Length: 161
Image 1 (cartoon, helix red, strand yellow):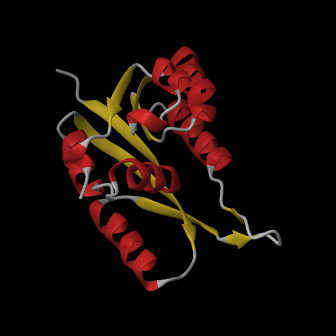
Image 2 (spheres, one colour; image 1 turned 90 degrees about the horizontal axis):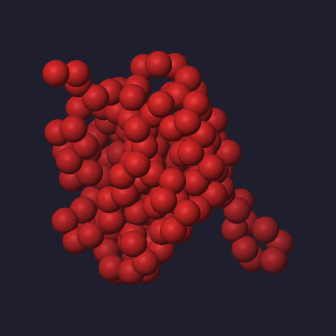
């Protein structure tokens, strides 16, 4: 039997805010890792986050690294109007395309509810024959993203802290 080779891409900000807003709880990346590891070999795993430099955030990033994630950070940018910027969409898209093109994986797992990724999943599925899966909070996951994935896993209580 062929073992699935899996790459995980976690949109940390999206997962943080959607689980907090809907459940008032944090996402449990260790439980997710254990669940996915039962499906096959996790070849690579990336967590995309914003770096503010506060102690709690650094502890969280260290915990992700300990689980097995390669943590990619962008600086936190506060705009003059008070809003903040820290978007990883293009970086995630590039890494997903590179993983799909490498031939090293057959399953792409995306943790996000962001509908901007629907075209990306369709593209890697059509061009590279990738199996695509999405984990997201049902109420806050774009319908187009759910439809684009081969499999959708709603984040529920079992994957929360």
